[in-house]
Image 1 (cartoon, rainbow, N blue to C red):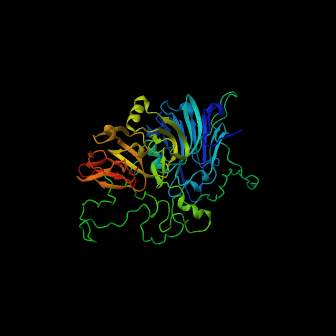
Image 2: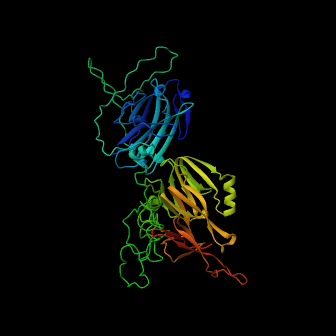
Image 3: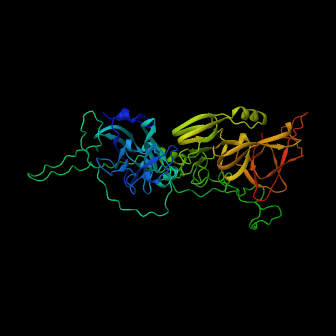
Length: 542
């Protein structure tokens, strides 16, 4: 009797069947959609080191024919033949995937499955439905993986990108133009029964489901059994998950929506209505374009509708979108998937897709609010030296390491979150303003000398390399270009470009909360640097 797996279940192949010549069938369908079902042969690093082990419609078998694409048969949308004892030693995993060819989402699929058949008998089945997915256009169904012996795992992990993004995720290269070759459909090869009863079962495709046929006339040849017709499946989640208004957006109100820059006011000495010349610095208090190709702080995330983040334009905060029913009320707040590794869901919630890039994420402990898929969390220790430095400088971060294949949602106390992508450049951020970052980034404590600072110095974290760091702020910050007269309160500045020169200012002022007997002395920082350097200041003070 076949065993039924749920997502995440694993078992040794030898516990399922003594056979090693196996049939793998995949059934997946949705009205109006077509699917590409493939198998990726991966090495020990889970990378496609050899393109010949990407088995799909245009490359139906591996060089030694240990993996073969058989086509649709026996009620399966696609099927494979896998001979485990012929797989080369450098292949450690076989990942079976399904991607949508064209427009569509995995939430539209009906009930499907991936199954293993040995000797004509089904030994294991993993069923799935469209309710398990949302806007994904690809899904990793199941894996054969080598861990002392060959094992099978039910994965069921959605992937935002299509076949091209999935191929890049496994380290493969996509050709610019590849004309679709008309491959002749291959029938499953016939295999005889094993010679000895004690021998493991030989390969045999499952019998096609029997459909009642009209009785043939006497002497007429018997008609071959027709494949079972696929009943049309009503899409369960046909509506896209991207947040969008159910009705055409109303005209924008007079005030600018939350998170958008106010209309630019004329600079000091500028005639109202005059347009600043090209290349002129942005007026103070107005957002400046972020250098180094970084996203603008407070900028509307890509893929989000205009207006407030996660709320349609013209709809006041807290007021549900127009439309009838619960689905219409919740539509503006659905998960946003853009196919990127880091995706803001709104101003206070960030999603990271660990399956993209293959790099673990280091996040502040306690910042995870939800996760999907196969994700593992572990404590990231700083070591004895790191703890000593962190305690002495105040730049200690209690981190957790997030690994696996899934999506993790991060937030902390409603702070505004901003993903900053570094491409070989650097940024200085105080540890208390860092929520998460890619492990590929190098980071260290940087010292700012000064006699006017309590303790003799200030400290900050410097991040460099290629990757993303998520910065959190109180409110929407402003990005200012560094000029010879740029000063900032050390309690309000959030980050600055690492190439900027930081100098202490001797100015002293009274804090708003100063009381008799306490002067409230503080320290201001002066920034200098070449054009292109910047500082980030939040509308908040400690």
